[in-house]
Amino acid sequence: MTITHTHGIDATPDPTRWPDVAQVPAGPRARWGALIADRLFRRAASRLDVRVEYPDGTVVGAGGPGSPGMVVHRPGVFARRVAAAGLVGFGEAYMAGDWDTPDPAAVLTPFAAAAPALVPRALQVLRPLVLPGQPVTERNSEENTRSNISRHYDLSNELFALFLDDTMTYSSALFGDIRATWETLPGAQHRKIDRLLDAAAVGPGTRLLEIGTGWGELAVRAARRGATVRSVTLSAEQQEWARRRVSDAGLADRVRIDLLDYRAVRGEYDAVVSVEMIEAVGFEYWGTYFATIDRLLSPGGRVALQSITMPDARMRASRGTYTWIHKYIFPGGLLPSTEALEGAARGTALRTVERFGFGHDYADTLRLWRERFVAHADTVAELGFDATFRRMWEFYLAYSEAGFRSGYLDVQQFVLTKDGAR
Image (cartoon, rainbow, N blue to C red):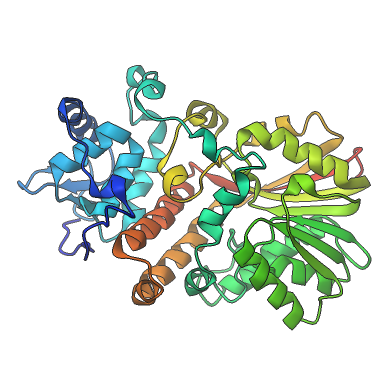
């Protein structure tokens, strides 16, 4: 499609807040690398259903007039950023306004679908030599995890409330055959939660451990079934909100919410539920995560785990890569594969008895969140988040949506039992 409108950016990135966005890579390496990066990007785009427009009137891409379109406003700067930092630079270029599009999710989806083949295989082997690895300070040891979690989840409860529905549920909804709209989102979130609680056999008298509280909706829903709930989080903001929600629901005698690392939990529980928390654990600690659940779960107990997953080959190839998501959104995390999760549980008494995938529903969930976030851009600014942050957050939601829309990512619910109980 021909682009007649772009978002633009209404402020120069603050160099104290966004040093790597405000500063353009310089030096001979950046200049020479930019020539290669520009050629590789144009080559990749030429095979995809997109239209990339340049200031000189050049249009690259295999798409027709109705295809997703992007404008590269500053081609030289864009190429330098990609040359210096790969996909990190690609995201930073969007944050800086070097490129733009009316619909970032639509543009990013064809790139996500072709992700394994975008970079020639000969250059992929050089990735560890030219791109940075994950900082040691961001690995999810007990010393680092609180800081990593706080950088995302403690941004502002008011920020999350602007784009989440009234359930304040920050994970994929389950729409099934129901049309995905803002009005149906709360019911779809409850459908997802209820499916997990059913899978874990949560009912009257169940001693339930929730690893990763969110803003408390699952704990409240479990307590209303008659369960006694202990929920742990490392986000002070989430703990405060969730405790208030539990109190307002009149369930304070049934729900306990602790600011505690999952590894420090003690006791015995009939069921464990964890929703999209393992992605923040880090691959070095997946075994610890399952060993901890095994230690805490009573014989015959059940586990319901919801996780985003990616293909195993891509997970292994990118495991040591420092990504834009690491740098700006979720430090220290890694999306697991199905094989990695089942392998990590193999040294325990836990056995997977059910898997259920619904990745397309996550694409719809993210679309609704992104539309809501963009619609409240002025209020986001009033909360103190600048234009660079707002572009970063929109890119994050669109980037994630594209992963699910393309099928590159999935979200699954895993049911595990201890000692093979069914």
